[in-house]
Length: 210
Image (cartoon, rainbow, N blue to C red; front, side, top):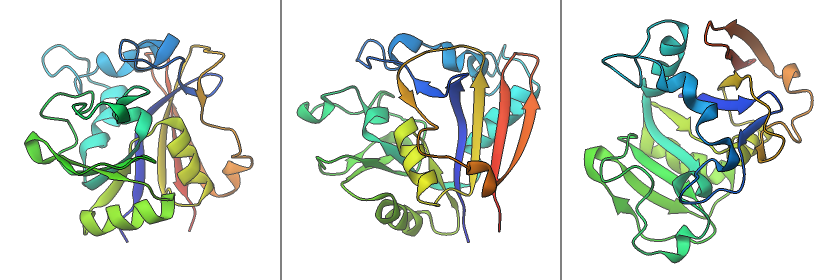
């Protein structure tokens, strides 16, 4: 069966996937871009001058083998985007997903077709319900779970994630959207591998047993 995978999800040492408050000017709140600087330095992000190596290898897996994406409302836009009928996401007219992309929100709107094969669909649904819709759209390909932290946490807690790639960045945020809350004994259901990078980040890979 096709898998549900999370890739390149960066968290701080204290487990936060973003800072606060999120806004149009600061999508990751007080964290700024510090959670993602490791990725910006790779050839995955910067084809001309980015570095090759372990970070680039892990980052590149984000693009391989997906037929649909699921994301939370706060990944699609800043607080209040539901009140703006002209809001079309952070990524311009050619978003990087290139698949049907399902945005979880309590205020659905009609689908939004973009360039490059991305169509945003807006669902008021449980994790299991959203996954059923995304799997149908993905066919024989995998479903990518894009975040944010609360969405990843809810899908993991529901037993719906097969592969979870986290990047632990050596910063302490102290507040924001935290991944780990409610996921006690996660290690009992996943095999875990750890790879340290010269950049200072640690790549944690969780693969669901069975």
